Image (tube, rainbow, N blue to C red; front, side, top):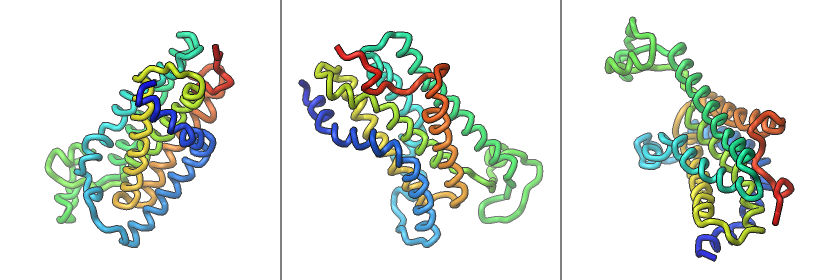
Length: 256
């Protein structure tokens, strides 16, 4: 057994807790964190830090490419963790969950851009309240060197909550694999640990967004869309035959 496998097996109680309780209460946790962080922001009790700047390292290199990070880690993890005791057709079916998730992410992102354009006004600058005519979109205004003020639904609140919920769902098979398969590949264990790490990072950056950026309603709507995207797929659609299906649980396995 590799040292990495030992670390994974020691994390079994945490994994079991996440599966039994985390998946149930995590959506409520995100709403509470969003509203609680918004209250702290309004009261101005949280001191400024490197995380109050959108230029912090974690935001620039991780959050801005968050969907790419999700795909890089989840694609091989879903393939490997769903392969034990299952045929290739079922594994391929499960992989389409990433296609669905990407479609949800892309659609919501386009909605955010549309809302920004239809609710926005172009000002000469953020310090000069002079409305400029002839600019119909955020891109046109900013490309001309001006300031666009609009209703900005929090894309960070959406993608960080949505990503975390998906990761937690997809890690479910590991509980069975850790208990019954000592010959797991080191790649699977490494991916599992990386997904745990990035899920913690997404929650932390969600908290930073809650206390430092956006208005309460903007963050609430972003969180609502993230939770709704997860709920409508994993809690509604994936329960039906014509869907990617849920990640396999212990009862779905053919243990040899």
